[in-house]
Image 1 (spheres, rainbow, N blue to C red):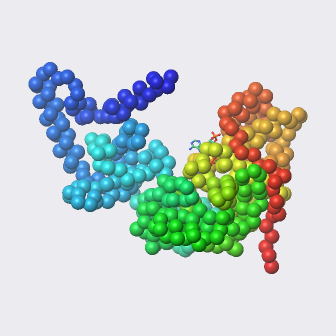
Image 2: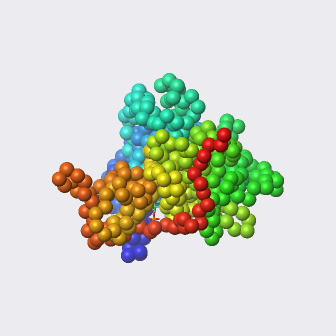
Image 3: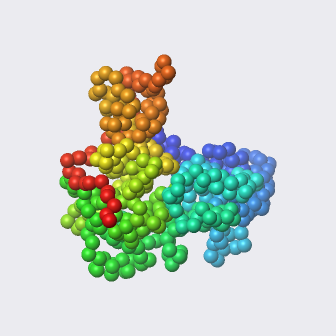
Length: 445
Ligand SMILES: CC(=O)SCCNC(=O)CCNC(=O)[C@H](O)C(C)(C)COP(=O)(O)OP(=O)(O)OC[C@H]1O[C@@H](n2cnc3c(N)ncnc32)[C@H](O)[C@@H]1OP(=O)(O)O
């Protein structure tokens, strides 16, 4: 199996043009054993014409749609988001920042001209600016009062300024960060203060999260910084895993630095400078050098919408190891201690949605499997602190809900439950509730 898959990949890389029917490249294949001079001449003149045509489209305009070779060797449709002139380059010599329309924005990147198939350029530019602005306004209207990635005064912006803001945030600014022993490629734009505009790499102190432009600055800082764990209270410790609760009001700079850092991996969140209203739960792996941040979630101190989690992040080097499920489970344990049901703030990212769906499926089906007799959605909600709507949508997506005699009924055939549970994957790291030392937040007078 493995070897045949490898062969297939190698073939695709060797003949990328065949993946999207590129006649010019196929026709001009220099490796073909041509026996006729006429065919060769025809081929050459075709490729000359094609070359001229291709050069005629340069430089590409922002908004152009074209096929682009990605890291898998295949061609994928992209939209040009931005362009910049190459140093020492000729008149038409640009690099392009592209969005792969089939993929998440975190894969947006600067690419070289050679990666583009210029024969596939679609000349019609993207939808009208006006339409885009209207849709942006719509989304903004739907957002909650405290905007997720709140840029102060943002909602007051007129259409043109709003568009300008979107323009500004669509290209990733910081390409990599250094944090502890990891160098991490970033995913999205984050609005660092203007003095960091010229930086492509930032160096973070892994304990206080201060960020610096140069490695030497970080080294100097590390000699002085006396933190070895996040500020705030350690509210959970089990083996090497610790959770710290940080009050955004008491540790404002730390909380803001965390938001700058997190935004590099969160697309639909805008930076919220007023961190006072939030608590931050920082998950750490601890060793003799200190407690190293693995991920976190934030939570409003008071949520009118019953949100029990605002933003969640596992840092990329730690992803797919079960920490995300741990953080989600922890947020529900906090809700249980508060005697409330909770739900994550919307919108959920693609990875957020799969993680939540997996968690909800596992928790709910585990209960249904063990439970004897009838059980209602309200009872499930009381047992798990999962909001009734999330339970209903999860069970509906698994087709476990039927509508009989005017009411929703859960139909839980054990074999079907087992199949879904298997598909929901691993359970992740468990929260040992007996190791939690926590009381719900109370405003201090
Ligand atoms: C309310 C909000 O904040 S929504 C925004 C959510 N946050 C983000 O999108 C930020 C960037 N993403 C992340 O930080 C992480 O991907 C998280 C927090 C969503 C998940 O964290 P992880 O530590 O990777 O989660 P965990 O290891 O528990 O895996 C969760 C499940 O999600 C799915 N999943 C996670 N990453 C991926 C991936 N790259 N590709 C496919 N499935 C994935 C899998 O089903 C995985 O379970 P499995 O490994 O058993 O198959």
